[in-house]
Amino acid sequence: MSYDLHLLPRPPGADVLGAARARLQQDEAEINPGPPVPVKEANKRRLAAALMEENPRLSVFEFDYVSIAAQRGVTAEEARRSHRHLELNGPEDGPGIQITLLDDTAAITVPYWHGPRVAAAVFDEIWRYLALLERHGGFAVYDPQLDRVLSLAADRPAVIERYGAVMKQMAPTSGPTAMPGRPWWKFW
Picture 1 (spheres, rainbow, N blue to C red):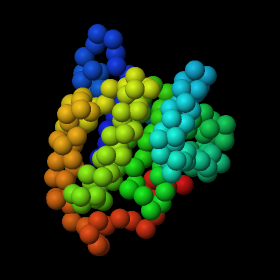
Picture 2 (picture 1 turned 30 degrees about the vertical axis):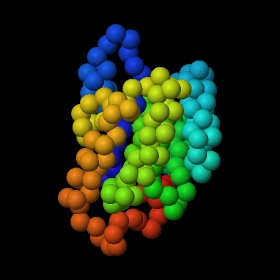
Picture 3 (picture 1 turned 90 degrees about the vertical axis):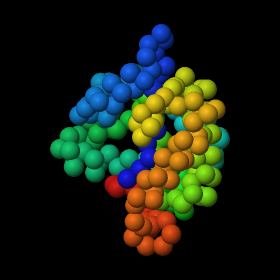
Picture 4 (picture 1 turned 180 degrees about the vertical axis):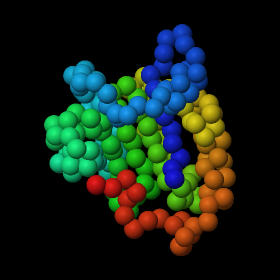
C-alpha cells in the first residue's frame, strides 16, 4: 500500500478536479498507449534530469524488457514501447519514494512505512518534487486520498494527517515501521 499523488496537466479553463477524477477512472490496458512522441519523450527526460539534480540520489529504474516481453508474450521491442515511462527511485535504504513520469502525467508514491516524525521529513522531500513538477511540468497535483487538487502552499498538513491516519490503522509486521528488506518497487 502506498500514498499516491497524481500529477496531470492543468487544462486551460477546465475543472482540474473533474479532469483528475476522470483520468483516474480510465482503465487503460496499456501504461503508455500509442507510439512514442519525440517531444513527450524529451520532456520526460528533461523532468527526470531536473528531479535528479534536485536529489542526486534518485536514479531511473532500468526495466528488464526481455523479462517483460516473456511475461506478456510480446517482443522485447513491444515491451520497450509499452514501458517507456520513467520511474525514479531513491536508494534502497531511502524512504521508498517513487516518481513515475508518463507521456502526459506523473505520479509520486510513498509506502506506508513511516511514523509521524519521519513522515514529516519524507513529505518535505516529496513537496520539493511536487513543486519542481508543477513549475517545470505545468502539472496540477491531485490527491485521491483527500479527493482534491492540492495547493502546495496550504495542503501539506492535511496530507501528512491523512497519511498518519492510515498508518495508525495499519499494524506493522515487525519493528516500528515494517519496512521491507528490499524496495517495494523492484518486482522484476
